[in-house]
Image 1 (tube, rainbow, N blue to C red):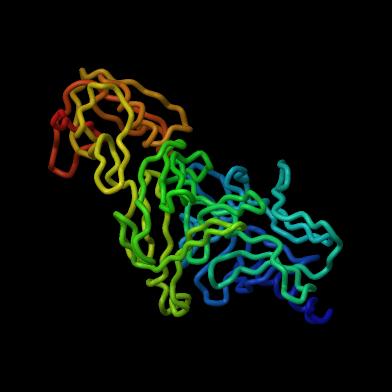
Image 2 (image 1 turned 30 degrees about the horizontal axis):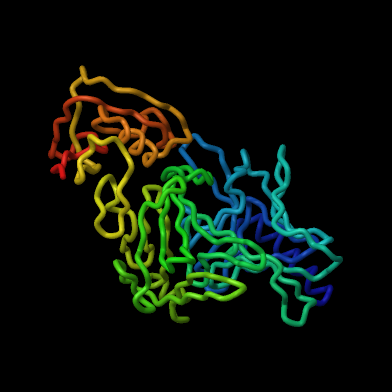
Length: 386
C-alpha cells in the first residue's frame, strides 16, 4: 500500500496531468482517482493507451472508453462500452470506496465492470505491457486478479488472450467484428471462435460457419493455414482454449512493428496488424470452397463457381435498383441478401449513409471500367456450372 502522503501526491499529479492531457501513469487507484476524457493511462512500455475516443462518421458524437495500440485511436482493439456509446465527453472511469469499478456518464445507467462482494480498500487497475487492463486486490498476497479486459475481447486477438470456454464459469471467449469500418456496435456480422470439438479456428457469419482453418498440424500451422506465431491449445476439465504467443522482446517500443494482433475485419477476414498478412474469409464470397471457405446457401440458379468480386464500373441509369437504408445492415448482409435474390447482379452500401451501412441492390447489365475513376460494386461473377 502506498503511504498516505505518497497517495496524496500521486492524486495531485494525476489531477494536474489530466488537466494538461499528458497523463503517463499506468495505474488507477481506488478511492479518489478517476479517468475522464481529458487524460489517459499508458502502459509502461509506451505501446498501449487507455482512454476515451470518438468513433463513427465525422458527424458522430459517439464516445467510447477503449484501449489502442501505438497511438492509433481510430480503431481501439478493446472497447469498454461497445453497446453503450456516450453522447458527449462526460464519461468517467473510477474505482469507488467499496471496490466497484464502473464507468459513469451523464444521462445513462453506469457500466459496471466489477462489483465487490466484500469491503476492501486497496484495489488497483493497471494497464499492463501486454495491453491487458487488470483489476487487482493489492491486499491479497498474490495480488488476486478480480477482473481483466482480456476476458471480454471485442474484435481483436492479442498474445495472451484466449479463444474458447471456461467450463467452471461458463464464460466463453470469442471475437465479434465491427458492423462497418466506422461502427463498432456489437451487431457485427462475423465472430471468430475456437471449435473445442474439432480443435480448429472458425469464422461464423450470423451464426453460420463461414470459414474453418482445419485441424492443427503443429504449434504453428493448421490444415490450411500457416501462422507467423506459435500457439498453444489447452483442453481439460476447467478450460478449452486457443492462444498464440510471442517472445518477450516484442513488447518493447523499439520492437513494436513485430507486435502481432489479429483483427476480425467487418468483411470476415482476419488481418494480422503486425505482419500485414490476411487470413480467414478473404476469399469466401459465394460458392468458392477454396482455402477453408464454406459454400453459401442460395437459390439453385447460382452455379458452383459463382462468387462476388469487387469491380469498378457502372450500371446504366435505366437499370432497376432497390434501397434498404437499415443502419443495422453491413456490406456482408447486403451481399447475402443479393446472393439469395436470383435477379440481383450487384450491391453496394447506401451512398448517403455516413456510417457505410445499408444496401443498394442493382439489377441488369454492369459495364466494367478499368480507368481507376469508377465507382466500386460487389458484383456476382458468373462462373461455370457443375
